[in-house]
Image 1 (cartoon, rainbow, N blue to C red):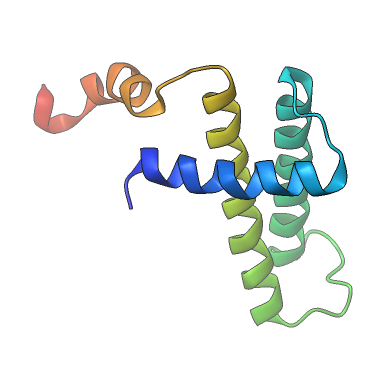
Image 2 (image 1 turned 90 degrees about the vertical axis):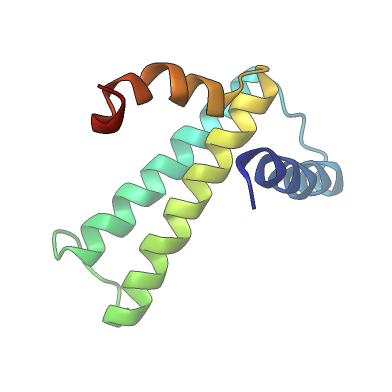
Length: 104
């Protein structure tokens, strides 16, 4: 799946969830949700690395938690970019790819 299609699919899920729960998704909401998910990723990372209590979770559950939170962060980055009309593929190409060793 390409990034554009993934963004469309994530938007469909987020929009349906917001409609179901009466959530207004504005610029502030997109930023705060991303921040919330980064916080949850941090917690999952700390638990998995032994720097926070595991709350009785197994190593497999800790791994799954980290994977899930990484997915949430990516989804919310995609949602925020879409909300602001930002083409992430173009921005990555502009900012990161000039440094690619094969382009030097």
